[in-house]
Length: 93
Image 1 (cartoon, helix red, strand yellow):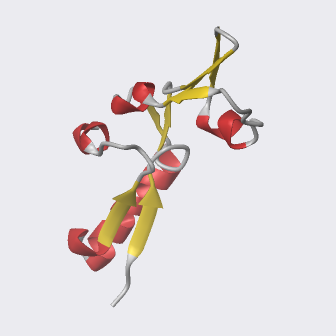
Image 2 (cartoon, helix red, strand yellow):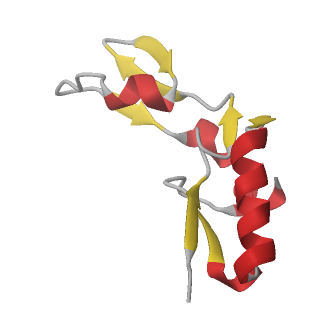
């Protein structure tokens, strides 16, 4: 049996969701890729609330691969994973 797993953000879709870091009463907004390299400091407040929604653009090449996989092995063997705290925006997309 084959199994396919696709990440949502930056693999299936480019979204406009941003991470918000509050440092010294200043809002710093960044993409999830930028946040991966961001040096967190003591006292930083990290806010992922923007990821409770999903707006943006599908990545056609990857979506095509996912659809081919679904046709090849069936929907029950194709999964979308996400680090988002809620999956509803991904399901609705």
